[in-house]
Length: 299
Image (cartoon, rainbow, N blue to C red; front, side, top):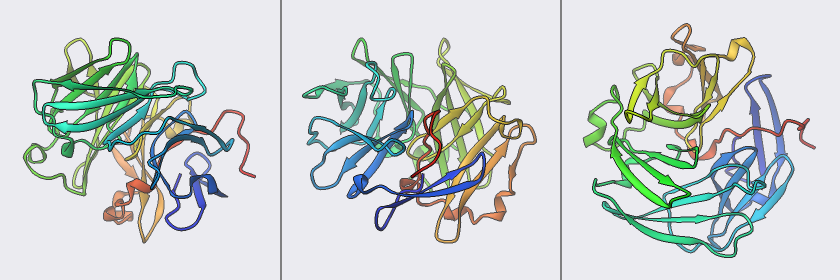
């Protein structure tokens, strides 16, 4: 989904059929996408600071209690139509303190608490897409190798040092380069991280939850990953040509398309030099989103 910079028209690009669809979404006017999952968007309204859920396929909207605090991370566990849905927001207080706010659809107020941790966590080193929900835990990954976990049942916050083995160490001490990216998602009960640098092919990791270590993956076991700045998503049961592949959006002034990386052939399709790599500079305007199973087309 390519979000509109001007006006109310949004563009949807289907990597399966390479089809492009346009639709007007006036409901999103003056708001910005924060996260996407299970056909739903989490939107932040400018001015009023209102947060709300919106399904661009059904046009259904779910409002949330007013949230007057600044925040850095925002995600939700599952579709807001489910009774299991939990909305998770992290606000930065200091390197050793964060404020975590939780809510659920239908609630009248937020639950807000401060949490202390022993390791210094800089939110300048965390990008918004590196948050994933799995088995009751929200996982947040930073570029300096810290893995934070919030337990929604116990309301506990834990920060551990779990560095990615092959992630460039220069990023741990310097400002993140525009050409270096980190993604995270959940796939089949596993936490998956993808590191991508301009001059290198992407590296895929799986978190060993027992040892709390990242292990390099050579295959996705027939699965597919869709990596994006605002959210990353897994894909299961796609056509053979899309299996064991990672899909990245390409969006800039010169082009708007999709590029894939095959773990079978260990190369990009089309070759990554076909696109100007610096065109991938508008990730705030792109989000991967799954349509409902019974969705046919936009009207």
